[in-house]
Length: 566
Image (cartoon, rainbow, N blue to C red):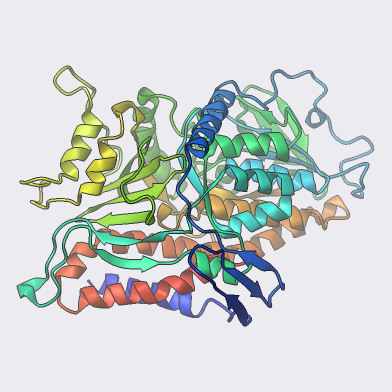
């Protein structure tokens, strides 16, 4: 119990002392139907607050059609190189020697491994600075699915600085989620020991927080949610040249050729590539990180064949569950203790106009839901159990084993779940709107901050989940990867001679590690607190203390997350 109390205090203090006070702001408000405009002295920018309006039939169709079109493009590998022509820039070393002065005519040459959000943003940022870029993606295609991703205010600012076209397309495609309430609810009827405290009914709010005002005060746009395939296609179309991504390209090893002399990169199919810089954006089981940190060969692997979208089928998902247990041991990654079920329900939620994001808390499990845009709800069911578990194969008697389990885990009628708890109806509302085939399952892994091991060595660096895998509680995984890409390109753009690359990558690491370390820790502590909520609420005074600390800390945490500088 002391661990949970210290964790709550840590979240509060990490928020309270991590921020410099904002400049004074002038706020003008009118009626609830009129946008709020806030002018910040920080940059004298006027930011217009969004006002929630129900989605029209036209908007719903637009969001869903765009997702379906992007899914088809992903399955067809649109925007990726169709076949090598032998003339790719990375096949040969730079004429006149790799060690050279960097000029417009002889720019830096950057290879990025991994074609997910981290890799695409990094490549787009480098391309925007005039560098030659190529992405090597091990997958055979982009997964034609993948739940909506929150592009929070800080990530939107990074995208705006990288590429205005990408930024505008993302905002146009996105659904604003910061215009309604978010927070924590109790999932089932809950009292406290000997009745010494409040009786909570299922669905009662415990903590509510506002994600809009911290963004407006920092002069940032409001958070939006966008389908993963849509984000990928926007970055492929507007962020990098056509054919930048080479699929079925897995890095086996790399060799430093000397300070300023670049690298020789060998792929598993025997292809040889040359570059000035290698960036590992290849996920939590990164092959680049494995070699950089001298890890065992089993530390990396084919986590999935669908780039940044997970397994392409149920058989692959089962293999991934087993393989990840072995890779985690070799890669020094931590199993969070949770398996996660997820789906995107094509369903207009009953509370859609009031709530954009909520967590229903329970014993050793919780249920998360968020507006996915287009009258759809993205939900996650996190259940505490050992790693590597898989669901039974469908049978005639039980054709939907995943859905059957979840309906029992979050049962809303007597006798309730296996603990005897009868859950709030909202979880069932979304589960019943989700076909069995739409439900995906994966175990959640994260890692300790790489403060001592670092993110760079020589002319090689890592970013995104390769550098800082984190629990999804704060919704900052992809956002921090976006910040990484921006900062990495900024530092490399200052390189005037290739011998300065190593120093630039070290500066990138030093500027990023304090922020990502704090966010990794907060995400991990938040996850631990959520699953132990039931124990804490049982003890008089402890539950109210936890809730008060959470409510007080959230504005500080959001101000830390929503910074315009990173």
